Length: 105
Image (cartoon, rainbow, N blue to C red; front, side, top):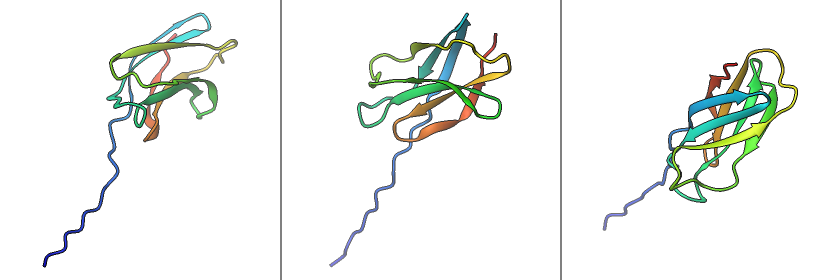
């Protein structure tokens, strides 16, 4: 008799790709692409941060975008600091991405 043993490893998808960033006054719009599979795994947020990682504003995404890829959401942040700012994205399984994109003004 042969016993088979299988171990399930967590499935890691690519982090959300930041494919576009626009700023108009205090309104920041970010376009993300992510292989959302449904409520169990989807891009669930992005944030604006300073060079040292201080969070200036966070956009929480409340549902998957399985059929809407890529997608754009906006956030209004009054009094954005006058220093280099970056966008970082997050997914519900893998957390905050190591990659950030500069917010060009």
